[in-house]
Image (tube, rainbow, N blue to C red; front, top):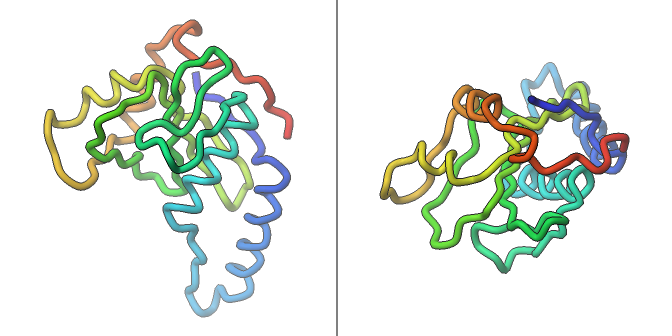
Amino acid sequence: MNHKFQLPSYVRDLVQARNRLKDHFSDCDLHFTFDGNLVGDLGEAVAAELFGVKLTGRSNEGIDGYAPNNRSVQVKASGTRRGPAFRAVETRADHLLVFQFDYDACTGEVIYNGPEEPVIALLPMEWTGQRCVSLTKLVALNARLSDEDRLPILNGKK
């Protein structure tokens, strides 16, 4: 079950400013794509807003925050059709949220909302650098989850 939502107003303001730049410079083929750090921060802000995740800041590798039920949460976000990238880290979260943003429409979609372990199981046992999991695989895994496996959406109206 994927959930589509409007980006929060403070994120829409940023995205709309980016879209105005993109439109203004369209004849120059400038895209004004958001980089990974900004996209990740936007994903964490959305997780806090929609799911009540209490963010931990940059100090906890592999864990971005804690859900209201105290489960540790990792957040991944993208504005492209590529799947999220994972690094080989010691600590894994209990739960994973993956968001797909459509900046032109100022919307987002929850691609995956469930335990992190089945997603990590799709990756090699050992690797260096980053490895991606395809959106197709995430959507398929997400479709098999029960409601009990998901974090409830607390606020989808902003």
